[in-house]
Image (cartoon, rainbow, N blue to C red; front, side):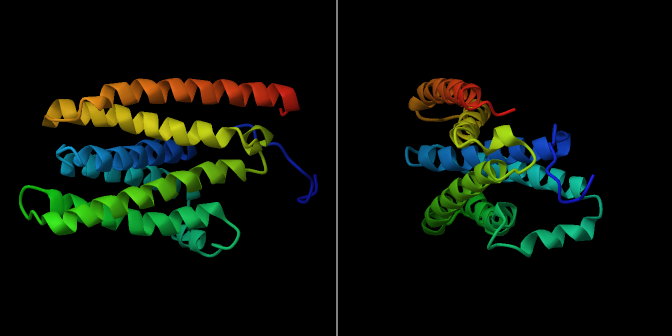
Length: 208
C-alpha cells in the first residue's frame, strides 16, 4: 500500500487513552476546584491532585512515543497541530497550578497570589481540555472521532470526572460547597445526553 493512501486506524492503546483520562479529569478538577474555592473550600489538595492527573496523562504520551527525546518534536508545529498547542498549554498549566497549590497551602500561604494563580490555572485547564477535544476532532485515521458531536462529549466528560474527584477530595480533606453533588448529577446527565447525540449523529452520517 502506498504511504499516501488513506488508512483506517482501529484503536489507540492504553497510553493514548491514559492521556485523555488523566488530562480530562485533571483539568476538570482544576476548573471546579477554583469555583469551589470561592466558597472557602481548601484548594491546595485538589489543585495538587489535578496537576498529578494531568502529569500522569502527559507521562503516558511520553511512554507512547518510544524514544524519549522525540517528545521535543511535539513543540514544532503550533500553527497546525492541536497536540503541539496542548503541549504549550501544559508547559504553563502545570507550573501555574503548582504555584497556586503552594500559595494556597498551609505552609507558605499567600492569599493574594493564590487567588490569581488559582484562576489562571483554571483558565489554562479549560484551554487544555479544549485542545484535547480538538486533537480527537482532528484525528484523520478514525472517522468517527472527526464528528463535531464528539467535542461536547470530551469536554463534559472531563468536567464530570473532575466533579467526581472533587467530591472524593472533599470527603478526605473536609469542606466543600453543597452544590457539588448536584453539579455532579447535572454533569453526568449532560454527559449522557451528549453521548446519545454523538451516537445518533454517527448513525445518521454513516461514519464507520
